[in-house]
Length: 520
Image (cartoon, rainbow, N blue to C red):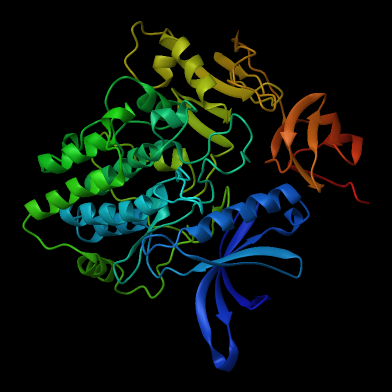
């Protein structure tokens, strides 16, 4: 069943999330004209939120400036029937993750020169974005911040396109994200991004190096099965694993390129995409092969010969999208390479992280409520000593007598704490705060099981509000669903121009939706 949205016909939903949904669509014109495209539409309950509309419009304005063959093109921003949307070009091929997995299943590891060419073409698009200037000729210092295999698409004609500049940051943009939030997929973040330092183009080059590593080896350059262990691998002084550890036939020249991309000190990385491209070009020439878009197109046609539509939904996806189109199963990866790292870091093209993760520690499953305050967690884990070493799967200096679980919770977001657990309580960050751990970290050791039964609280507030639960600040709407103990709680919604509302909410098992419109 199709739906009209202005001059566009929405043919099929590709993905949906907490803030927007993405459709395969058709642009209709006079005399039977029709063209495939992709439409990203704001969910109805955000259409009255002026701040979210401004953020969405800012994404459209920025993306409209990115007019390059190696970047997905935005060609319309509009409003129809009270619904805001962005229309963008349709790509008839898979993302790099799907292409790599399918190639490994059918043909074995991807050809080294082909992998290098795909990254070369992606770097071409990134270079354009990095060099973008305003009307006065000043650099915008644009950084993508979310480069991953999911955000690089390959069309059937061999074109390679970088997508999803939804969380890109230019120096001229207003700071629309809340202080303390880290956007992107953790497994592809350089140390400076995890440390919340100022980012530059070299940060994207680190992420591009991780993608090249995956194409070469089929895995990640670290053994990590959780966000915590990913942070430790990237933030530690130890270099990431060389590709030849898992792919002994990797040419030394290509390995040198990967290693330079993955330098933890950005001063030792490639300083621009042009530098990276020069070395990639030299490597491809050294193989004696002629590898261009035609060879890339041939690979796509070979791998997806019997699939008419291999387009994936990771096209300028909304935050937290739940993919409705299943991706190919992961190919078998070399021993010691983490097959879960991309999943642990995020859901394939989403820009956020999972709200809940399950991690097996010894024989005990721990439910962990994720907090966006990544660095506070990293510092605290480092201070846990032998217990943290045990949880991270490393050889401990002193073997603890029994399994120890680490549970991470927001202060004010209760979670289930199993027996023999160390609860790491991270204080919620006040708005516009500096470092997220100003208030300190509380370590609580309690061998007794604490049975806390929670429900989920979701808020739908128009136009927006600052939210307090039991006098504790939760932040500004829109907010993700939060875990709250069962029973009665005081909820306060504050809008600076429309006043304050105090509600009593009775949290029950499952989902609890609270709606409020200040205009009514």
